[in-house]
Image (tube, rainbow, N blue to C red; front, side):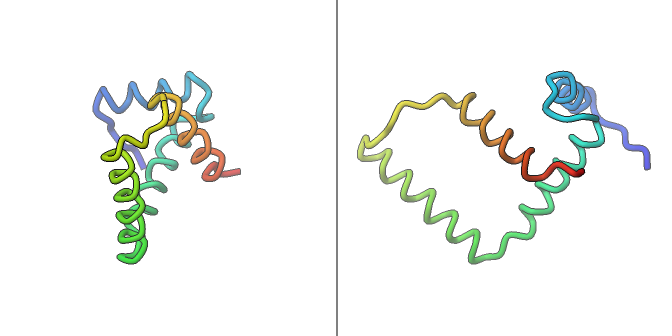
Length: 89
């Protein structure tokens, strides 16, 4: 199967491989498709549970109950964990 990517997506995939986050472009695409599949497979109960958890965070933020955080650091950690859990052998 051959897939054409738009220039922005192709650059993103190439950057992921260049940085060593993935071994190949195929690994990036497979990982992204697995994430999409997982997202689509969430049950209504799981979605509701996630919404409840988000609401807890929103309520804490509304009260000013916040801790310092670095969005880039959090995103990198999430990506690292997800990649470790979903890499194919």
